Length: 294
Ligand code: NAD
Image (cartoon, rainbow, N blue to C red; front, top):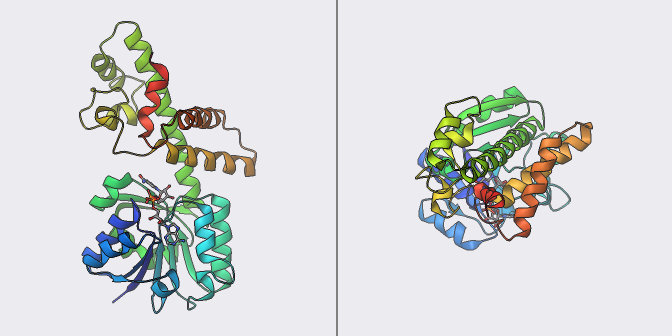
């Protein structure tokens, strides 16, 4: 049976690890927060007291950590996990981090004879719980085939984006589009309502017209337009504005490396930084609506 070490059991990692257990994989788990480890131990995972302990004797390591520095800290350096893993071990790095950082970790993995994929996800906590995440994967196609059944236990769409770091590039491109659409939808909703339209009527007209986009389909930012959208639940229960700001920052970093022109992404980042300054970072990213209403 494939033995997997799962490190990082937060909002995303915990439900992802649960789905692996349900699919019959043997799991050793570690997080800096002991309560998260205890939670999964109840579901049948083996609790580890450190990351080093979790990876002992495992064939596969999965990590789901906040940002680049956590990932580099976990794997690289004299005390990093790469120094402990047996050649041939598969490393599936699912956090959203800078493409440059992912490439650095890929290089270190290759130097140790490890198979590595950068595999950030889309679909949020609901997708993680339902096992319907989208994986955007960078690395060798042959390595992806070895890991396919593991990804399939946690997600529905598994895309090979390209070589090392390509998964992270796809992720930041996608989230940049999402942020720009959300801001554009929010400002149009406020404009229409200020000019006397009913929010639900305007939302439906735009949804079915050439302005239609994912935020109008699934995630309208105006409270009350969509019953299950975070906007109708006080902007809770979705994707936090501070995480969107993080991803927009990563997109700008990637643009810097290639001298790409990304004016809409840059403006979106500035708008999300304003929201963070207003103390709204922990609210769903559709809270950007509030910038445009009196
Ligand atoms: P989170 O903060 O809830 O979880 C991260 C976990 O990592 C925490 O439990 C923390 O204790 C643990 N951790 C940090 N450093 C560690 C270390 N050295 N060893 C062991 N554990 C460590 O974050 P999350 O919402 O689960 O997001 C994880 C990643 O997924 C992020 O990169 C995020 O951008 C990305 N992501 C999140 C969502 C979402 O909706 N939350 C959606 C898509 C992608």
